[in-house]
Each structure stands twice: as C-alpha cells, then as structure tokens.
Length: 398
View: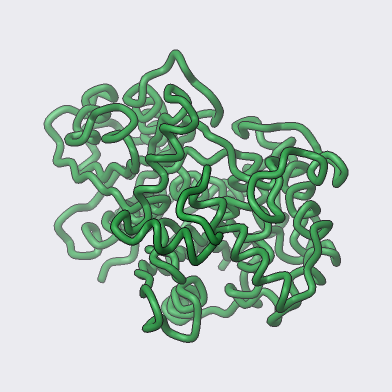
C-alpha cells in the first residue's frame, strides 16, 4: 500500500451559523484546505464527503457531497458520500486512504460538515437518537435509565457510562468538572472554537443537570461547522513542504449484547492502531478524544493506554493532559468547548493534530510534537459504541 500524507487542512469556525447553508460551510472548508495544500481544484481526483444528519435535519437524503462539491467549484469530479454517525468524516478519511493506497487515486479531498442549529433542539436530539438501534431503543433506554423515554438518549448513555466509571475508579463530580475546565482553557486559545471562555469548577458543577452526574457544561453543544483535509500519495511529495504522514487509520465496529468482547471497542481499535503505526501510547505527544461528555475523556485516557486502569483522575490532576503537560489532550477545546457538529468532528480533530504537528497552533502549540492520535466514536449498540476510528499521524521529525 502507498503511504499517504496530509498536505492541506481547512476549517470553519464552529458555532451557530443560522444564516449559512450546509453547502457553504463545506465549500469554505474545502476551499481553504486546497489553498493550504498549494493545489488547484483541478488537482483533486476524488472527494469523500462525511455527513451524519442532513437527511433528517435538512431533507437532503442523497448527493450531499455532490452539492457541496458544486458550491466549491469542484465540478465533475468523483464523489463518495459517507455516513457513519459521529465518525462520519474520520470514516471518510479511512475511505480516502484506501482509495490512494490502492493506486486508483493520487489526491483526495475529505470534508466533514454538519448544520444542526437551524432545527429545534428536540428535532436534533431525535436525529441523534437514530445513531442507536431504533427497534431496540425502548429496551435499551429502560436498561440504562429504568424508563422507556428520555430527553436525550445519548446523554443518558454517557451518564450510565459515567456512573459505572465512578464505581470502579472512585472518580468524583469534581474530576469530571475539571476536564471541562481544562478544555475550556484550551478552547479559549482556539479562534475556531464555539466557546472561548475559561470556566471554573463551580460554574461547571452549577450548570443545569442533564442526566445522572452530567451537567450542561459537561456536554457537547449543538453546533454547525465544517473541516477538510487534502490527502496525497507520499510519492508525490512537494520537497518544499514538510509532510504529515498518516501512520494508522483503524475503523472498528461495536458488538451488541452479551456477545461483546471483554475489551471495549475503543481499546481494541487503539491497540490495532498502535500495532499498525509501530508505536505505543508512551510515544504519543498530543491527543484528540471524543469527549461528547467530559467524563468520557477520563475513560479514554485508560482505553488509549495513557494511564493504568482507574488512574484517569490521577492523570488529569497531575496536569499531564493540559497544555504544558506530558501528553496534552484536546488542545483545541474538544467537543465540549470546540463544538460538535457531528459530521465535521472527525475531520476537525485531524485538522487540529496536523496543525500541531506543523507547529502552527500558536498559543495552544504542543512544543516538539511528533506523534498525534485521534479517537472518534459514534452511535451505540449497547454496550459498545457502534463505530470507532483511531488515527495516528506523524510529523516530519518522527
């Protein structure tokens, strides 16, 4: 298989863009990524477009990528559309890597985009719930909460995960709030983040309770935005530009019910990614995790091997995962502060990591970063997520 580099990135500000269409958001990110790669639209061989909910929220069930391509002036190029819950655009990257690795394409543009704020919150939450097995939804909800209907299914899932983690690790509400506090400080340094205000522990704990131990400021917000990457075969490298090499892209699917393996999906996927990249957790310098709820970040410390089982709170308290620490996690603010426009999240994580590996992250820069890892999970099969991607990137110095 051919090796692949990320040669260009683009991202829009995340937030509520009520006067902006989905196609315009996507076009802005794609145009920026192509320009960053110092390429022209005619250099793009294929577009792989990731989006999760435009069918439900926008009524555009089909040809979403083709519409975005036209808005960006990418007429008549091949387009593939990928829907894979919250991993839609990281899954699109996985598809693009296969396309280049096979030799069929040389230069592939990947874009993830979502517009959520144009619809009422109940409509958005209902669309999100379609990331679970609808036929089993009452049964699963009853097992998680004791009732068959809840306001936010996925926050109910995260609340149950959080309570189980508290029981086995001794983590406290203060620990969970401190994750949100850390990431709000990171988000305050990110001009594209939805929220750019530092929070206190008291503010996080005092915000409206959503489900179980989760408060509103521990939960990712409704957001709009787009992010894009240009991937190119490494043998076409421009000698004047430092490459960011894709060392691993592992896509895993969850297992429902009692047949689920002993190890959670995220751990299985991460272990496969480390093996493919030829590195271990100790080699990683900067990490993006899917913190749709802040406690999930603590859980992911352990699943990714950044610390031992039950040691997530200790790792957080040590300062190791904050900027200036040993392995900063979510330096862009993560989903809770940067925002979580579902179809854009996977690409947004990778845009941040490429920016870090290039040394261009300004006030949130991780000095000397060589290896970067992104974990992006989505959907729910009970007890596993439906899907997880783990991507490992390497800078020129690696």
